[in-house]
Image 1 (tube, rainbow, N blue to C red):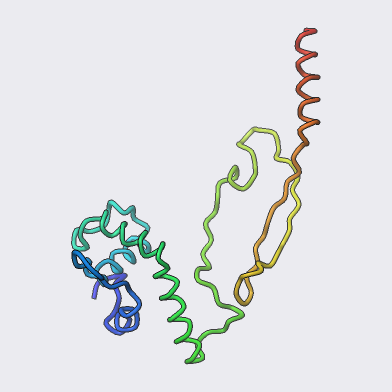
Image 2: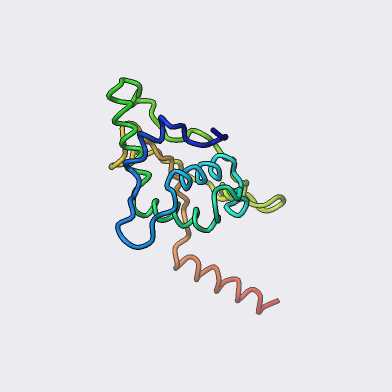
Length: 165
């Protein structure tokens, strides 16, 4: 077995949850497609750098998007959760799909570029999602925006002052 690929035991659990070809041309081997998706997602490489043993990257990418749209990944996750819960291996208070963090640039987080004026003050809100699972919390940032009337007044004042100069 190669790196990032499913074992035979894992494949037996997941295989019934993958789509089957109803009509037309037979599907590309689903196990090969899933292994290719895992390779891209785990390695962090672009789709175009997919090794040739998995077939054309466009085919894998098409399957990835199609399965996402049709809820295949949600069905797999749900089936694995049910199985692990029955075995008593999930602590629902600590359950999460991915706990990694990716640092965003300062400007993506609301800060200005180097040397620019500071960003406006923000108010932090923490809210629990209504339809979320056991303990899902979202952190929101609210920023005050000037009203339209204030903006117009400021523009007209600056226009008048520029004419006087």
